[in-house]
Image (tube, rainbow, N blue to C red; front, top):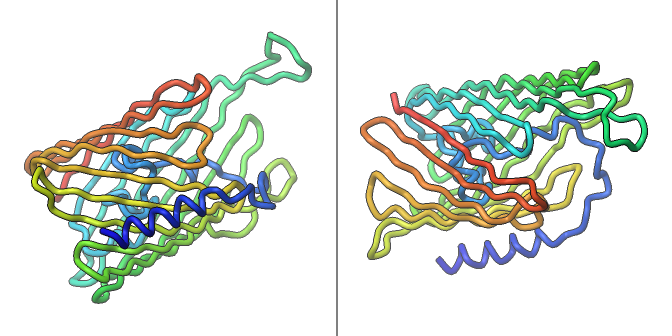
Length: 296
């Protein structure tokens, strides 16, 4: 437990770093959105809490996972909505694989040529990704590799590209895991005759699980350094007083959109349902996220 608290303190320190010098040069910003209600409720700590949706956050987490299928929908800030579908399959004794689809769309974006209360027109923006990943468990280590093809359209302009994800986990003890991942790495893409990079992101995280008198407890911490934005971090705490019910809370550091996160999870037989409550800053409103998974 002391090791985990030390890690979380280091992560919080990293989150105070300034804006990266390449701010604004990355395309496909939707890749940095949380995927899954459980991850959203736990402060965005997807690198250690991605579970069935690990294909989006850290492919190494797929190692050792049971076969499952998951789906989710959430209305994000404003008119932005996100939908996803993912399947996990065991590939022998040491390997697991996953495939997934994800879409993010924003409608009714107002367009102005001069300062005015009345827009000239409105337009839409749509992102779509097709993902595949494979992972292996090798003793105390897990390794994962992911690949995705992405298409983005903003009004009359569009762009396509591909990227890879790499993830590694280390389990020094059954109750503790350390994670490192390098996400969204791909060649430059062109949008409106301009070249942009993928939002390549380094992620470091840790998670501790333990038993306390009132149930099972886990504490997670994560720090992310994207190519095109400042370093940010997240903290998540999950308490399971019953084997079929979990309460979750989290906090995001250096995230202008919001800080507090919360949620809950329920499971019955082979089904699990997750909910996240994420209030936004600056009158962005509150988002409610839902995920549904079934073990096969």
